[in-house]
Amino acid sequence: MKPSEYGAGPPTEASAWARMGAGSWTILIVLLSLLAITLVIVYCGWTSAKETDVPTAGYVAMVIGVIFSLAVGFGLMALVFYSSRKGYDEPPVLIVHPDMIEASRPSGALPEQ
Image (cartoon, rainbow, N blue to C red):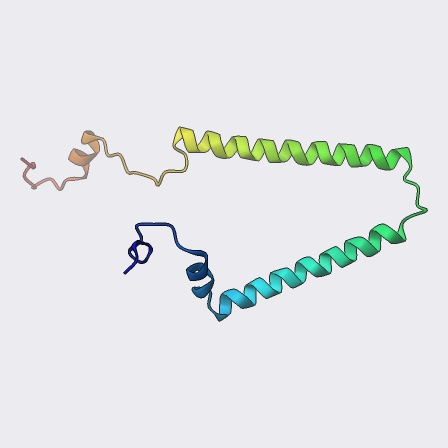
């Protein structure tokens, strides 16, 4: 057997295409169809608006929208990195104080050794 069959080497291009099942091909065809439809709609919209002038207020609104979208994106990414580095993304851990263990023990129970 070849080394790539054991996982020692990178998979060959033929094996990657051979592993795609019917579901993968269906998803690929649907996504490529959506891309083609989007490109057709963009082309039709672009060519139908040849004589349209955008007023100054339209450009100002577009710039404000782009700046606001970038600010929200940068802010959310900063929060993701901050929460990851500070440990806020870790699962919760119950920290029990020794005094709480004593208080929760029944009155007749022996202390643990």
